[in-house]
Length: 356
Image (cartoon, rainbow, N blue to C red; front, side, top):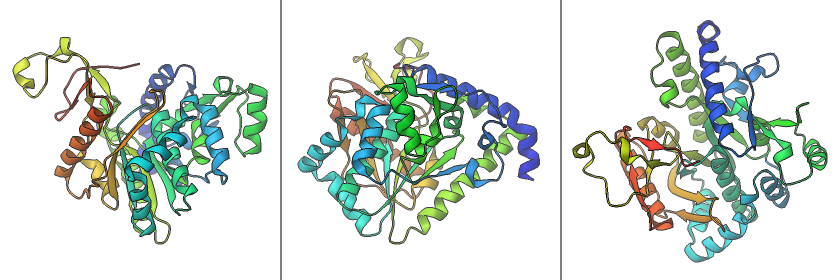
């Protein structure tokens, strides 16, 4: 049934995913490129039942120093993150608390504010590597948009000479395409034990109907079931799950596009530097219910990076619990940048402007 549906519906969905990938690539300062849909070249673009289409089973680089080096080559902002995390834990013991939870067999979810794709991946790698240095056994996992399957990393943009990059990456078992790009999924395969792919309920897919809607629903159900099964059987190797919980990246509030001020009485109109934490779908509970959730903000755009982790973990079990997570994300965002106002898009209708 799923195969028949996806064969008929996936062309339109693939086109939409490609458009999403182009937006991400256009806002990456040349780091990413977007691959046009090509099932012959990239068979995993299909929405079929094959597990490799909705999850990427990987093997993180064994040596943590090498893992940090690769992350720094992909994104120079990462270079100072390991040191920042070390100092942050000395001051707050937040990462120690997460490590203790993992040691006790508890799964832990990092409920990340929604930065760009690269920010989410780097946050997970940074925290996971820090814990690995403390000899804390865990499985690292990410949840990201299926759009990453339509994206590649331009190795000419890495912080190392392209010819050295090619040889170094090949030595790590990463394939480099003829156009000097590496599929993002190949980088994720050396960054995390598993990356789960979902098709998010963003504006791009909000209004799809018929077969397309059914195909997306069935794809996401299969991915969600995979997450639930894995986290339910973690045993002695609990999961550290990184997931950007809002449905969209943090954006600036567009005050000029607000139709009726009376509808938005909860906003502070005196601060024009207001950033919007995107609407969190109650469906996120499916991913988080088997874990202790820590609201987490890791700002790589700052020099050095800024980190804030809410030590009051959340047990998310019901749809209404997303409000607690949203409040926590807003609070830690304010702690990191008290000169700005942060507001949660509680109805998903606030007009915004992309920050970059």
